[in-house]
Every structure is written in structure tokens, then in C-alpha cells.
Image (tube, rainbow, N blue to C red):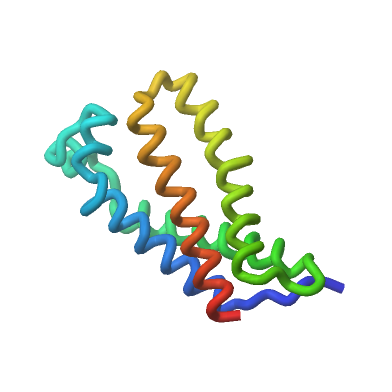
Length: 137
């Protein structure tokens, strides 16, 4: 016995979350995010990081998040409607993801602005994932 997984929804939910991140950290908050981290665009580009690997791992992790959200929704009978699904995902983000980030950022002595940008990204990404999962399933 298990829950039904909506694989297309999981895949598209991860794609949507990935796109949210791209938009969030470029168009919306790219300059503010770099300023909060204390780096310039040139420093980021010269860091030696492998963008393909970073984006690939990011996408795999977003697949995991979308899968777990879909699984959580599948444990409800009947499966929750869009409103409840958004509340559940928002609760996961606000109750688990963002507080865990907050602890890490506190000990890293990161700027509050960096925390708020990153926390907002994850809240919005989770809500968009749910919209896609709900629309496809």
C-alpha cells in the first residue's frame, strides 16, 4: 500500500521551482542578493564553481521536494484541494524549511536581507510547485 505519485506533476513542479529560482535570483533580487552576500557579479563568475553541476544538483533536489510534496498530498483521503494544498506547502516552508535556514544563517552571521531573499524564494517556490502539482494531477 502506498500513495499514488503524479510523476508528470513532480517533474513539472521541479521545473517550475527551478524557473522561479532563476527569475528570483536574476531579475527580481539578483543585485540585492549579491550585495547581501558581499560579492560582485565578477567574483561570482570567477569563483570556479561549475554552473552545470550546481544547476543539475539544484534540479535533482527540487525533484525530491516536489516528490515529497506530492507524496504528502497523497496521504490525505480525499486528496486535498488547491487551497488546502497551498496551506500545507506554505506550512512546510514556513514551519520547517525557513526556520532551518534561519538557524544556519544565524550561526553563519548572514545578513537579514540575505535570509529574507532566500526565505521568500523557498516560500514562493513551494507555492508554485503546489500550483503545478495540483494543475497536473
